[in-house]
Length: 185
Image 1 (cartoon, rainbow, N blue to C red):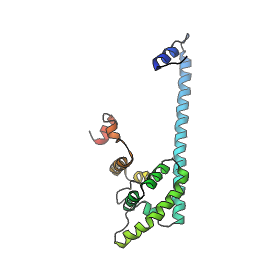
Image 2 (cartoon, rainbow, N blue to C red):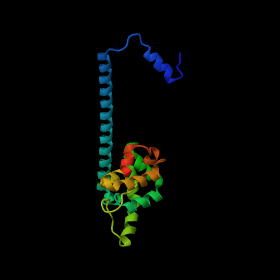
Image 3 (cartoon, rainbow, N blue to C red):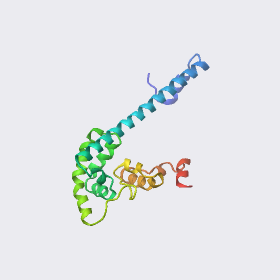
Image 4 (cartoon, rainbow, N blue to C red):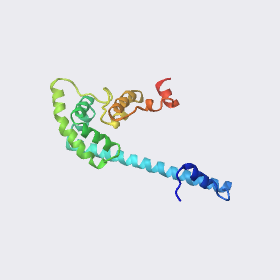
């Protein structure tokens, strides 16, 4: 027998001959809470693992290619890289977010090889390299945006959203009290 709507399933589920006792309801709630907690802990562990893998890839790339971190944190160099190598830039974003993290060292190598000449060109013009703290953050890396003070993140998150998102969060849920507070409404 197949059920074609949620209402039919709910009716079947609620049509039990004996309703659950208070103790049974509490037990079901306890099990559900424990499962939710386990899921949340697994998510946290996954995030920690991705962060460790990313940090390890950055460290190894910096050891193999001194100056990588400085170039990777330079917004001007990152923008130029994004313009010239958009597919690799998207792959780096995906890998840093946990999708394909194993390829991150190779992607950082590509970034390093591509941007070494950018840094030389920037140096020849006499301009100095900027850090995320003194310049705007690169749209290449969520880690760079997260390193900024909270009050400076919004504009960079918006720029990142324009590059990779379909609908900005504020537009997606304009009636949300949280987003109204953040916008100062």
